[in-house]
Amino acid sequence: MTVVATRTALGIALGALIAAAAVPGVARAAEDEVTFTRDIAPIFQRSCQACHRPGSIAPMSLMTYEESRPWARSIKDRVAARKMPPWFIDRTVGIQHFKDDRSLSDEEIAVISKWVDSGAPRGNPADLPPPVEFNDNLYEWTVADELGREPDLVVPIPEPFLVPGGSPNWWIELVSDTGLTEDRWVKALETKPSIEGFPVVHHASTSMFLPESPGERERFGEYALGKTADIHPDGTGRLMKARTQLLWNLHYSANPNGEDTYDRTSIALWFYPRGTVPQRHLSRQSVGSVTDLDLPPGESLVRTDGYTFLENNVRLSVFQPHLHNLGKRQCMEAIYRDGRVQTLSCADWDFGWHIAYNYADEAQPLLPKGTVLHIISWHDNSQGNRWAADPRNWVGWGNRSTDDMAFAHISWYELSDEEYQAELEARLAARRTDND
Ligand code: HEC
Image (cartoon, rainbow, N blue to C red):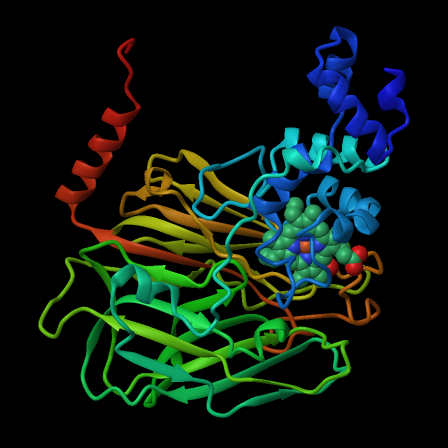
C-alpha cells in the first residue's frame, strides 16, 4: 500500500516492478490502482479519440497521457453526467442494442472517476495498448474501400462556405442540384467535409426533394463525426429520382482559432447497377410531428404528444429525435391495436448533437400495420436551459433555431404480411432457448 500511495509516476513504476517481483500484498495494491496506460487509454481509444485527436472536431486531444492529464476534472464531470461521449439514450428503458454505440458502461465511468480521484496517475508505459489507426486520409471515401469502387456521383454544397475566424456556432441551409437525369437506387452514401473544413463542420444532413414540390422532403443522409457512411444491406436501397435536389442543413462549429476556414462538404453516392431494383425500399420519415407547439415563458417541463399511424407493417432501423434549442428529452413508443403500449426508446436531447441511433439488426422493432407511433417530447423554456435565447418569451413551432420543433426522424422498410410473419417468427425462434 505504501508504495502506491505516493501516486507518482515513479511510485507506480516502482509498484509495477515490485509487483513483477511478486511481493503478494503490493501486487494486489498495484492491480487495484487505476492507471492511464492500463485502464483509461483503452476506453479513450474506443469512445473518445474519433473526435478528441488533432485536426478533429473536439477542443482538445485525448490521444496521450500528457494531453489528457490537464483535463482530468472536466473529463470526470462530463462522463459522470453522461454528456461525453455524446450519446443520450436512456439506459433504463427501451431497446439497448445499437450499431456504432460509443457510450460508456457504468463500470467504465466508475473506472474513470476513480482514476481522476486518485490523482490521474500515468501507470506503467508498457501497459499502453498500441495506438488506434484512424483513417486520416480525409480525401478517401471509406465506402470506396469497402465496396471496392469510387462513388458514382459526388454532390458538393453549391460553393465553398467561409467560416470566419472567431465566429460563433452557425446553422445554415443550402441547396445543391444532383444533376441526375434518371431514377437511381442508392446502395451507399457518405457525407464528408472538405479537408480544411473538417474541424469546423459539426454536422451536415441532407434531404431530397423535387423542384416541383420543395415542401415534400425526404430525409436522406447525415454526417456527424464518427459516423460518416451508410451502406445499405444487399437487397435494400433508397430511391433517388431524376432531377432530385438536395437540401443541406449544416452546423458549423464555433471557430475560435482566429483563422478563416473554408469548407466544401460533399456527399458521395454509390448506385445499384442500372436496372437493378433492390427488393426492399428504405425510407426516412418524420413521425409524430407537433406543429402547434406551445412553450410558455419560464416553463421548464412542457410535454407534447405526436402520433403517426402505420398503414403498413414496418421494420424500423433508426431513431433520431429532432428538437431545437429548448428540447430536453424525447421518447418513442408503439401503441398496438390490442392496446398494448411498448416504449421503444427514450433519449435526452442536446441541441449541439443530432445523433441518429441505429438499432442493431436483431433489435430493430417489427411493427404490424395499425400500430401507432407515439412521440413524446419535453421542452424547457426556463432560465435553467442554457440554450434558451430569452425565457421571458413564448416559443412556438418554426424553422429558426430560436423557434422549436418536436418530431422524430426514423428509417424503415415496409413488409408484406407474409414477410412480417416470417421475420417475426425468425425473431422469436432466435430468442427461444433449449429451456423453453
Ligand atoms: C462525437 C465526437 C466526440 C466524442 C466521441 C467525444 N467527444 Fe468530448 N467533446 C466533443 C466536442 C465537439 C466537444 C466540445 C463541445 C462540447 O463541449 O460539447 C467536447 C467536449 C469535451 C469536454 C469538455 C472540454 C472543455 O472545454 O471543458 C470533455 C471533458 C470531453 N469532451 C471529454 C470526452 C471524453 C472523455 C470522451 C470519451 C469518453 C469524449 N469526450 C468523446 C466531441 C466528442
